[in-house]
Structures are given as C-alpha cells and as structure tokens.
Length: 342
Ligand code: KDO
Image (cartoon, rainbow, N blue to C red; front, top):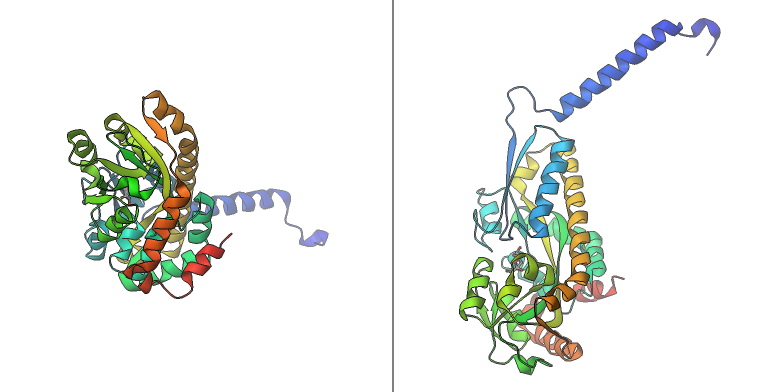
C-alpha cells in the first residue's frame, strides 16, 4: 500500500476495534434467541438409568449445544423410561409427541423390515467396524432412507456395547443347545425375540425397566446386555454367571424428529451434529474402556465368568438369520457391503 493510501495509525486502531466489536456482536446475536423467540424444547427419552453412559452422554450433548447456542435450546433428559416406554419412542416422534430419543435399529426395523439386517447377531465385528459402518456411506444411505420413510433424522450412532448373556443361576453353557429352555429376557419386539431364539434360548419379552425385578423374582432366568449396562442397571446383583457370547455388537442412534429438525436453521443443525458427535465420543470411549475393565469387577462381586464355544454360537446364530424371513427383506448386496467394511 502506498504511503499516502495508508490509514493513519490511530484511525486504523479504532477501525479494527470497531470491526472486532461488530464481529463479537454478530456472534452473540447469531447465538442468542431473537427478541421474543422462545427456546426450542428438546425432550430426549431413553430407558437407560442415570448411571448409564448414555444418560451421562445426553448431558454432554446438552452442555455442548448450550455452549454453541446459548439460550437457544432447552434440552431435557428423560431417563429410566419415565417419559415414553421402551420401544414407543419412534412412533411418539413421528406423531409429534417427542422431539428426540436414543433409538435402536430394532425400533427402526419394526417399520422398515429391510433394516432388520442391523439386528442380526454376529454381523458387526467390533466397535471399530460399527463406527465405520454407521459413519460411512452405508450409514449415510440408511440415514437418508429413514428420514424419507419415517420422518426421523438419525444424528449420530453411539456404541451400546457387545451383548453377553447373564444368568440368575449358573449352568454349563458351551453351545446354543445348552441354553434350551432358559427363559432369556429380551426387549419386547419380534426382532429381539428372534435373536433370543437364534441363541437357542426361550426368549421372554420384558421391558428394560423390569429386568432387575424379573431376575430377582425368577420370572426370567437370564438376560442379555453389554457389560457396562449390567453394571449401571445393577443386574450383577441378581445374576450369578456371565457367559461371554458376544453375540451382538450393538448401537443406538441419537435421533430427532424431522419436524423439529427442519424447523432449525442450517447453523443450528450443524451445531447439533457437532454436539452429538462430542457426546458420542464421550460415551464410546467410556463404554469401550469399561468393557475391558468390568470382567474383574464382576469376578470380585462373585460372578462366574465363562467362555462358551463362540464359534458354535456364531454358526448357529448366523445360519438362523440367513434362513429367516428377515434375510429375505434385506436390501440386495447390503450384507456383502457391511462385511467388506474394514
Ligand atoms: C435392553 O432393553 O436390553 C436394551 O439394551 C435394548 C437397547 O436397544 C436399549 O433400549 C437399551 O436397552 C436401553 O438404552 C438401556 O440401556
């Protein structure tokens, strides 16, 4: 810049200060609700208990969103199935009675049977595979289809854990045949019950909130859940054995109704996605860590930890799915694509 064109130093500083102040004000205005605008209420429903990483994760989501958009949202976490019972959340969102939930693919498959593929035992290999499947092109495609068909927007996949079988009374379990006659509690939908049946057990439907009492009173002989859930829901207090079947590497999805989603600005949607990703990072890290640590914790509680013939379980369960009416509805080529994700 030629000397004569240069802005005199004093003026330059004042101009810079003004520009900074203007930028700051613009930021504040973008973040704060407009005059007279009420906060968007986001009620999130989950059956998980307060000690569960999923509930803790929802507070991370709330705090991150509040940091990004102060005063714009009123995030309310409803845990323990107190707002909507387990399995009723998707329909509640579709009817405009609920804004957000942690949904399972079993919930989705009730209305989109082709996605029962994600409920199949011994399909997803481990947490990394799970993150890559939902975080890559398959996840994008599934998210788009679910939004089109159900009017529900999946924001973020979160790890639930690798499901294991736990039993109120110990028994020798090497193969699925050894679970014959065992009243194994499963969540109450046919996709879940099929998994229990494929494991060789006698699947018994029961809501998550009733499992503890069911185990204690003997209404059920066992249940299946990942180790962090067995800890947070205190199922270990009423069971004596954990059989490390590892039959389902399971996910949940933080989801929002399309009605709520489309009412948001693009900037707020982006902030919400970032908050969901942060929350997922927190959850996944803690769950993966706990899955490694908890065996020792349970042993110390007097729980017998047994390792079955996992290959026998895998073969029986995979065969059951491939021969089932579910597999007939799976989108052509999706199984191969999921298997090919490395
Ligand atoms: C359960 O009821 O066993 C289950 O693990 C099923 C999941 O889909 C999910 O609903 C979960 O419970 C709850 O979030 C409690 O952890």
